[in-house]
Image (tube, rainbow, N blue to C red; front, side, top):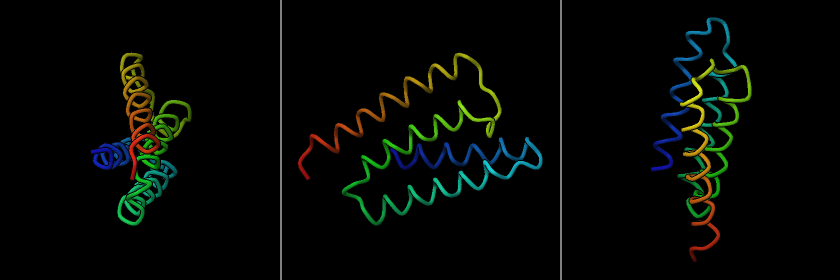
Length: 100
């Protein structure tokens, strides 16, 4: 499920990048983050919950604290902040507390 969310968020940057015109940084970064997530999920599934936790927070911070992605409404920012933190904590806890 986390991989699906990460893929969706990275893909949403494509739309933001095409609206921005010549900015390709967001597009390139979304591809890098997607590939990091994909290969992490496939090649090191034992560490996937920890990697997904980090990726979700990284996606949130890039979207909301850099000029790469267009601005969001206050309500969306709040919702994404809460969901990103809860999902990241849950994934990190599952990595550290669930025996593998």
